[in-house]
Length: 114
Length: 111
Image (cartoon, rainbow over all chains, first blue to last red):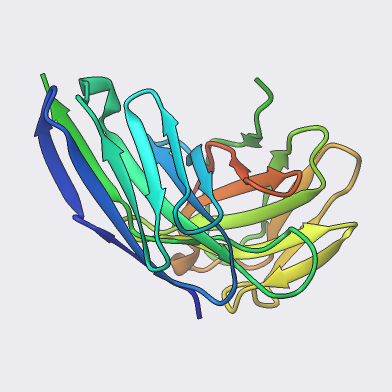
């Protein structure tokens, strides 16, 4: 069974204070690791897909990295508008096709104070 | 930018009643999903759907649940006899392959 554990559960930063969120995973046949952002009362908003160890993706102040056991979401010089819950999810499977389920972690609630 | 839309945003239903949650996936997507999120818990997979049939379902998706794509644009989740524990946010997602794109959900409240 695929499993995802995210830490910390909550993180409070001052504006401009860089930090990292962790996602540890176990999966049978990794087909992708995904980072989503979720604002209160909204659905998960796609940020990044990572497919193999060593891969990195960047978008504005966010950078996602992947190893064989974990992924990090690095936040550089965050702003208050980066406040949200960040979700990590894995997609695993060994059969053909693309419609595999996502297994999510509980998320990290990030609060960035001005 | 194309998006997944879900209606209603909030549904209040008496226990034992049937409820239908509706979703309009992104138009060129072929794969469709339902997930749910109980307050304070993880987003959980319910079912995936492709080529007019269920591809995979979780243990949660028992006989009280069903999905349908009644026309070329809608994708529905039906819960036949709701229970108190069905109260949750229900998210629809669609994809061309990867990644999955989510709607903003329907909050289902069972009284």
